[in-house]
Amino acid sequence: MMAETMKLEIFRYRPEKESEPTFQTYEVPFLEDWVVLDAINHIKDEIDGTLSYRWSCRMGVCGSCGMMINGVPKLSCAAFLKDYYPDKILVEPLTGFPVERDLVIVMDDFMTKLTDMQPYIIRKEGEEKPLEEGEYLQSPAELARFKQYSMCINCMLCYAACPVYALDSTFIGPAAIALGQRYNMDSRDQGRDARQELIASHNGIWECTFVGECSAVCPEHVDPAAAIQRAKVSSTVDWFKDVLIPWGKKK
Amino acid sequence: MIRELTSIFVAGYCIFLLVLVYKLAQGADAYGNLMAALKSPSSVTLHLISLAFVLYHTITWFNLTPKILVLYRGEERIPQGLVAGTFYAGWVVVSVIVAWLVLGV
Amino acid sequence: MAGIGGVEMAKSNEPIWWSLFSAGGMVAAMVFPILIIITGILVPFGLAGDDPLNFERIHSAVSHPLIKLTLFAVISLPLFHWAHRFRFTLVDVGLKSVSTLISILCYGGAIVGTIVSVVILWNI
Ligand code: SF4
Ligand code: FES
Image (cartoon, rainbow over all chains, first blue to last red; front, side, top):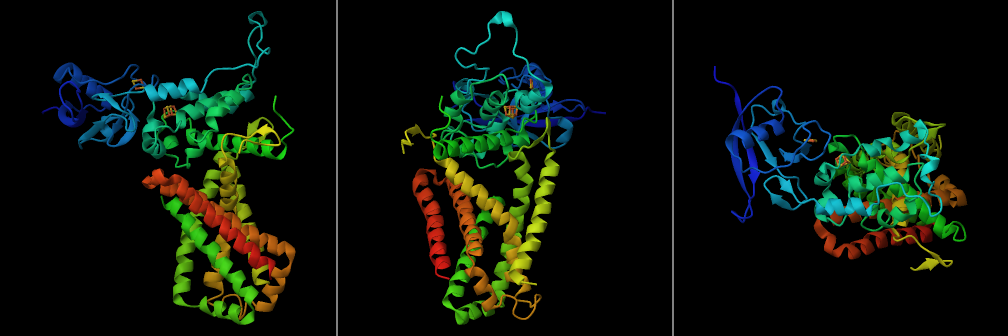
């Protein structure tokens, strides 16, 4: 009996060769336990060494293998062939980003946003503990408050799913805001004011209309949509505090 | 998108309520005419369509609220289902009170 | 606006619109279904008696300041809910280039509706 096979139609773009992207179809063996990434690796190794794509861990940890699979943003190492068999699978680079080559997108925009969010523990001036006093302690309950948001693997699937980002890439977007929330809600952190500039700006949370697609595609169940709504609540509280009790706060 | 479209029916009903109080202010005759107009098939149809959309709004609204309203009991987060359930229960109570107030039974 | 009471205001006035949107969404979710059932089903089909929304009774009820206030909230807040949601719907279907105009029309509409409701209710 012939081994079963299935087809992958893959987005190709080699800027030195073609000015417009094209599609190329490959036939790969169908194996029960293969994921789309296995099939693409097979193409790269056995059929066409010119295909470019990103991957690393093969186990949903590194976040580098995101692709549009039949139009849905997914980790290609977590999308099983058997869920599509025997139909042809359409593989494209993540939408909403410029394409560098084949399935490789340019992620500078996301990287800048992540850095701008200052995703690390910030202490107020003079409140930094000297190293010899040891670490900042935290109870399990305090950890539980933000743990979910710390699970992000920066795969950018949420950006590819977000209709607001697709329309206007100045929107800071789901993962970066969720990461901001992750530090804002960390009991050891005091940097909320510094991040608020960005989060509460026009391009921050207010662009979001709670479509919820980001949370639907997130492989780590970060629920960035909820993070954004909660940031809206706290920013609104800030705003009313500022307006109604102008003599309050301000350090 | 359906969720966004519900807002049109919400606004439409707001305008209906505006007309209602306006007629009420005008006097018994104007108000009586409006009450009679409620019986027309087009009014009933519009109401039924609005009801479908507004119910869709209510359901999506209550289902998403627990994501925004994160409550803690002591150190534990109150489960989302419980928060949503409370809203649904509140909805029933409010509906009964409104019906009682408006219909005066 | 640079500030109120000498204090820097938050970067954006979105919090006002968003809180009105949320309040209106909650009001609409809570009371619109039952109101629509009353005016669209119970009243026209006579399921709540002969003259369920009797003029004298409703008129005197609405004359009460508390009821007025409630009605005001029930009309005005959902208008802002619509304004906010509709604004973003229009922006998302590709009218971003005229987003300022859209904001003015949507929130302006809600503000006009609010003023009209105040005037009417005031005069009852
Ligand atoms: S929030 Fe989820 S979908 Fe977005 S980058 Fe992080 S892990 Fe990926
Ligand atoms: S290869 Fe690392 S997440 Fe898929």
